[in-house]
Length: 211
Ligand SMILES: [Zn+2]
Image 1: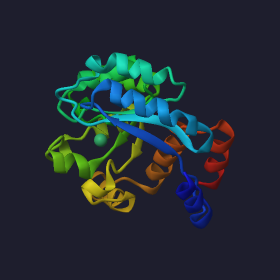
Image 2: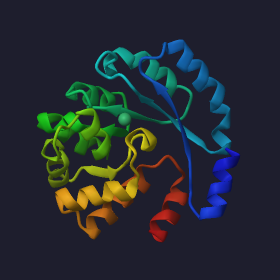
Image 3: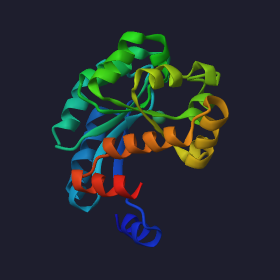
Image 4: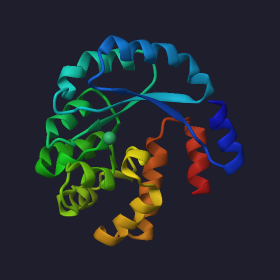
């Protein structure tokens, strides 16, 4: 947390921390970690995250773990829709998760896309990661245009930057190159990101003005 504070001061950015648990890790182990770190909520921890093996550990099977995590009083983000399994996205929305990483499988299912829009869920798209893992073999396999046309809250994300050897600049370039994403679109996606972020309304307002 001290490193975060240093970075904020040095680079003039606002940074928050999510602690990530893997879906395949035994539930008790993850809950022990989450319960241990939740005391850092005053120091920059703003929430939790679940990533990892989605095919063998679908959202429905994690329901208890998700509810236990929510009971700690902080929101969570959730990686879903990377294994062609749109049900994992639908169940995450049902469980009240407002920020979903990937959402790639949404392309297959208009009903769930409508749920994304109705619930105001944010879809954090990670193109490079999905191309590398085969979650989307081609950029045409991304639900970008469909979600865009329906007015869904899209944001541009990296997933794990070191694993995927990417950063936001590279991701932006991909969006421009393949989807013709405009400056106005990027502006809106970043407004979406601020609104979906786990911080106070006052801080969001401040960031929106700065943006
Ligand atoms: Zn992910």
